[in-house]
Image: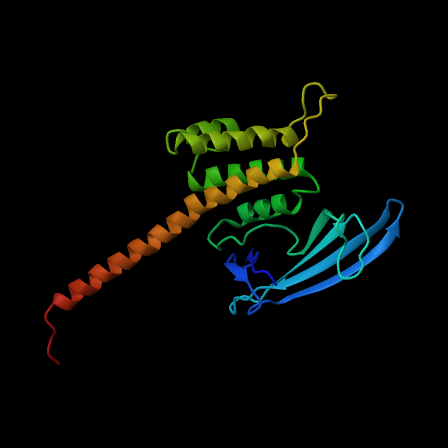
Length: 233
């Protein structure tokens, strides 16, 4: 087997899958349809991390039948479905507010089923993060984003405003009801990606910084206590 890179969707640890740690089950079958034969492969990959050992299940559809251990030279994947986990949402730390986690997870879950609704949820998730992390006065998202313009870098601010604009497609109908603006799954993923980046830069960075500062404060207190003369019993 040729080694391949794989990142566990549960523990997020990147690893190289080799013969030594290979733990994958394959099931292949085919069926006749109105479009001709279709082949399907079910793959289950178990995380080699001993602290995780969660497994991923993916089904891939091919545009040709399955025979002699392969789908033939003309066969190619035409669709795939993630069965477990049921989305590409990354696990979020417990210190991220539950409402934000819920909106993020749902945006990931419906990304392919309804990209427009996913974009709307990313917009709502972003608004919750701005209100919680930056403690802005609740209002409409446009004004809330402007309130933090001088607190973040220009590139991040532009990205945040882009989430607002794309999310508006699902949140608000066009003045002309015959005008339909679609959002593609790849575009919805861009919005989800920014949410993940902001969670790392805001919540995770703040948590890590606090832990580091608490450790330094404790160290200083311990050293100060060690300098004081001990009282004899």
